[in-house]
Image (cartoon, rainbow, N blue to C red; front, side):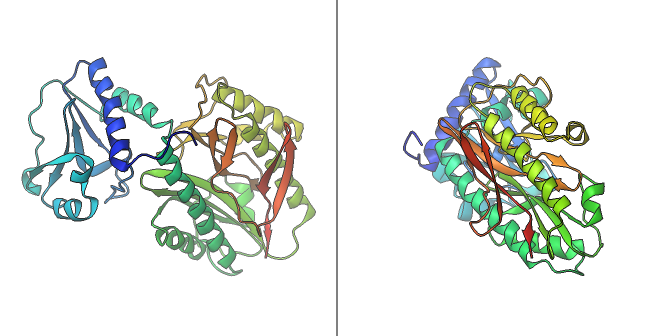
Length: 362
């Protein structure tokens, strides 16, 4: 994978250097980082959330050309010192009482609360370092394992709530968090592209969708299972959506654009006789420190680069296909690939065979 893995402090130093360039560009003396996803990025993988509903972290980072400081209240400080040990990564601490939490005075400061600055930082995060890719591979493997564990344990008569609870637990016990956890059973799969969890009991068919976050990175995947013999009509639908998904993966190449991949997906829908289905839900796109860093749209000019990750999620009524892939110089790898004993659909395209998950028969 190119360069030898860096130490964590080397990763932080390299990112700090990029932020120095940002400060210089904006003629600023400091950058205040408050958004949780950006805290995970600059700390090389800290899981910063306390209130998972907030995009802001419970502490922040102040970056200057010379140093980086954790801005923290006395509530968080003991844990950060003992468990995160940010001082080993070259950070110092600026501490205040929780009831008088203030930022040290700093002239000409920019902040990631400014959407324009946040967008510039986000673009820095899109190309993943070798070490981020190592962490992402481990996350992808665990995401697939958590999803399979939960769906294999589902039983007819259980509610979607009960099934989803297992997925939450499977992610948690692997050190992650299911930031998206969608479960649909039977007819709800065909009715809703975003099936929020209900108390509806499972009869024969279940679809589970997860976005699992760990260390700031997010991996996405979808699986379906059916109790009893799979109807031919459902098998045909999954074959179609698998072929569309494979077309999107195959089209994801360095130098192309997200719009190019979107066009390939549209063409694949048409070739499967489902040319209107892409209009009913987004098709996915660039991923990494968010479930979707950028959702692809027709004509999107965003250029694809080596080291970026993608999660395409084509769907037709009643079926969906989704995994997270990482793009290398010689092609892509599926980070959330299904286990060897999961049934698969083999798609031959552009001189390669792409394995997509079929519907599991239980």
